[in-house]
Amino acid sequence: MARSILLARHGHHQEVGRILSGRSDISLDEQGHAEAAALARLVGSRGVTRIVTSPRARTRETAAVVAAASHRPVVVEAALDEVDFGDFTGRSFAALDGDPDWERWNAERGTARCPGGETMGEAVARAVAFVAGCGEGVTLCVSHCDVIRGVVAHYLGLPLARIFSLGCDPGSVTTLALEGEGAMVVALNERLV
Image (tube, rainbow, N blue to C red):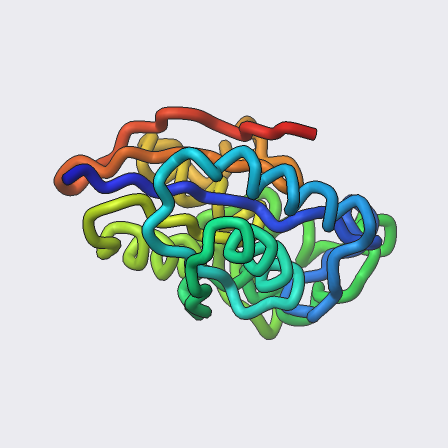
């Protein structure tokens, strides 16, 4: 049996695009609940055998909607957690603009450490290790934008500085077909809404 990974980004919440939510436990907003329902419809015919989610509220809520539609349990997995943005967490993007640590983080995505947090490389390594270890069947992994883009960049052989060239909208799904040590990107940033 083949191994497929569906990397789903959680639905929208009130801070998307304005505040670096990081590991906060913000919940989905009305739009996010609609996106989670659309995600459930989108993956409903794909034979999902396992649903795994980051521990954040927004991902657990998204996964719960898909699980209710597919009658599958949800497993929480720390390896799919958001990047630990440390001191950046909860700050608006406008406030981060011009911060030398923030500028360094963005210029050196692969190696720069968030003050009080982790590097993007560390976050991607833990997520890739989990994805690579997924067994046969179709695993839906509900995670976060930068983590998903980092996993895709890993399998495409792209440096982490290039992750912004990969789309990853709220409520979207990116499909990987795992093959040995590698993976083929089957679809990127699919959405119904």
